[in-house]
Image (cartoon, rainbow, N blue to C red; front, side):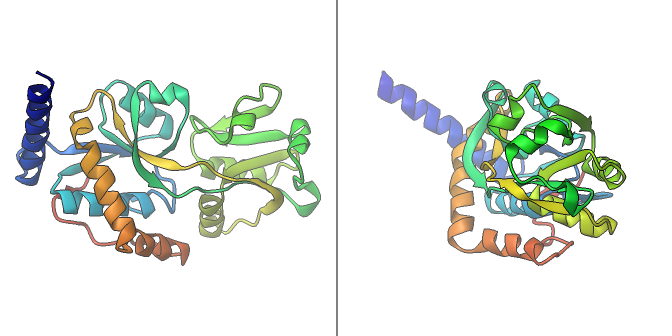
Length: 259
């Protein structure tokens, strides 16, 4: 009986994969916000490290994708209730694991850094945060000690660019951001905030699948294909492009539909 069940399960997974390759299933909904250089959204163009990686995955697996731009907190909500299939880049925490499957297709760690108004205001140790107002992105998690510290004064923003504007004229403020995203946005906005010497090693980011999505049947294929992309150097080339300050990503892959 167990062998029969496993054969039936394998057959079902194979059918789903074949249908995807033939373009017979509906496009998978990939949700995300503008967060360069990881996710770059300019009109109907979706590029950046994460979106370019997803395009390559989709091309190799023959999947159709529809990108949907929403604020980060809204993206989590959509994943919770099955209104989206895939989200690119969230860190792991137990609350999210209740409604998202964290696949083995991981994305690079990114250090969390603290930007301030001037060098005189820099953060040199964690305890320095207790006397400052900390600007954070709504819905994001950073690192366990920080996320669980109810004694810190945190001010939420829907977009980092708004938090940056607040930090420009606020000597009592500290802005926490992933380092590559922070450096990218400050350069793009031509704003000169100072980076504190204190930083925290980032957690792994993931490709996640809503537990209410049919895309769960594709988890193994997604994991194996990402592993192939890392082994053959494709992912390193995508990453290097944006580390050099590139803006336009790799060309749109076959089978990928814009928003």
